[in-house]
Length: 100
Length: 150
View 1 (tube, rainbow over the protein chains, first blue to last red):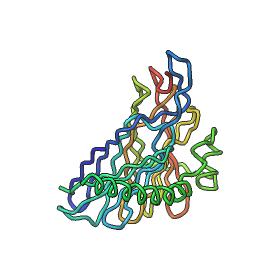
View 2: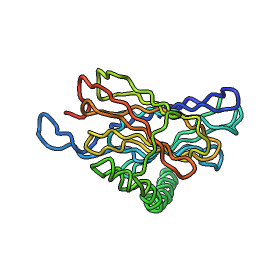
View 3: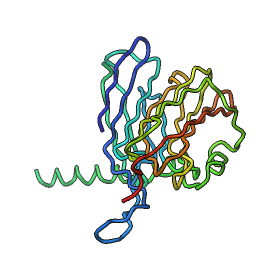
């Protein structure tokens, strides 16, 4: 997961690119003709300190390697944000990034 | 030395397993069945408990008019409305229309961007929840190559 966090006036602008196949469970493997099991991110949460500043729930219509951007107030340059995604197989990844 | 490593590994594993058993319930509670619903109205009902939408020009929905590749369609929703608590994006002809739902706590701007898949030419809807009411705007996106096929 790649995170870019940058202050723009009083808002912290966050851009996230999560590496994930986002399989819908509706697609078939062309060679074996078997359904590729669903594997998609269900939830993406951004925390600034202990505060949840952004909470996204995803369905199957979100593109492969999801990209999301948003911004929030109350952050300062040099602080960190942490992003966590959880997918439908309960795999979870957390990454921290400094706010520039 | 190896024994210590092994113990460390085991310890890490058990705490991780404990955390994992505690986590899904939390995650499940939040992720609603709305995402499995196969109709727009059904998804709205599951998500908000209501299908009463007011059209509003104060919502800006930025989507391409023509998407050459349905697998990656950039969508931006923003609004100047106050007290926005949730923004959701729906694609009415996808197998499950609800693409994403964003919960925005106080202090987070009512502007989000994401990339979604569109199986075919269809209408993309943005829903904004502000002051407990639902507002909407929509735009058609023409898709040249669908994004859901194998």
